[in-house]
Image (cartoon, rainbow, N blue to C red; front, side, top):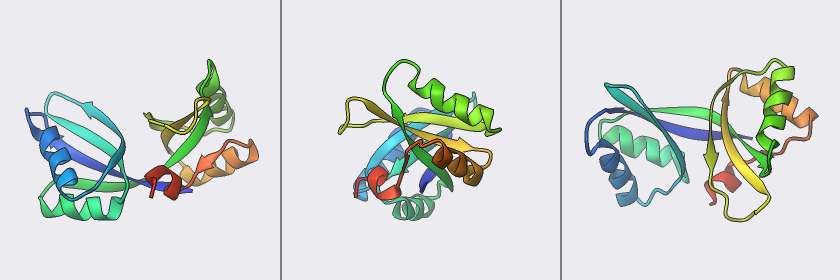
Length: 144
């Protein structure tokens, strides 16, 4: 139920993002979703990659500062209020969202996939199961 996310810490300078994506492409690793947050000095690139363990090793070998984190992929109704309903359920059950980002979905016109990092992933999974919120498995997310 949990998905591996690869985070790379990058200096905030021209070309760094291109370097990382080139390394992944050269190693036949496909980025399925990503989020980039920055400050004046550095950025954090968070990615869902089809083979996260391989991506981690390749980036480490190239001397990037890289981290593997467990996140959760949820299927959310792609309609006004769809995300709000999920977030309200989490809030009502004391689950804090640390961050989230969208995941492109090609197979469905009425569902969206969102990647979530919670303060307590195990409790979040329990709450979502109790409220019939669909959690996607790694094979579906990585599309392998």
